[in-house]
Image (cartoon, rainbow, N blue to C red; front, top):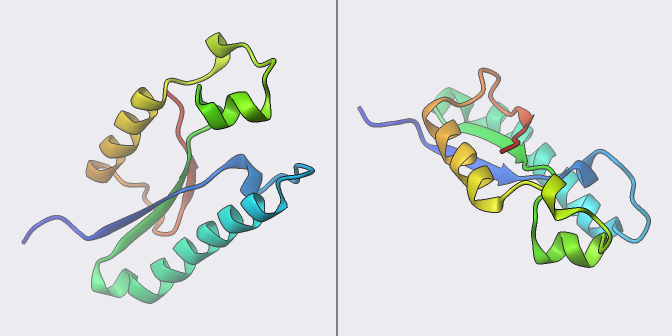
Length: 104
């Protein structure tokens, strides 16, 4: 039998923190987190794994637009964060439906 089917949602700290001007983004990320928990409950018996990852502050165009004064040396490299997320596919969190923070 092959690996378990896995659904990964990319979340944000905006899903649990209120940032003025980020309402629609925040609500969509919170909705994804909850959808992951819901699918874990509904599909877990079928062997489907679901988790949400919060990649943290990364050196991206979106982050530069939101916080132009941020020191890029303090921001994660998106490629390294992506590698960590891919590695989670082989070693998913123990709790199906979990929301985890991923840092480079």
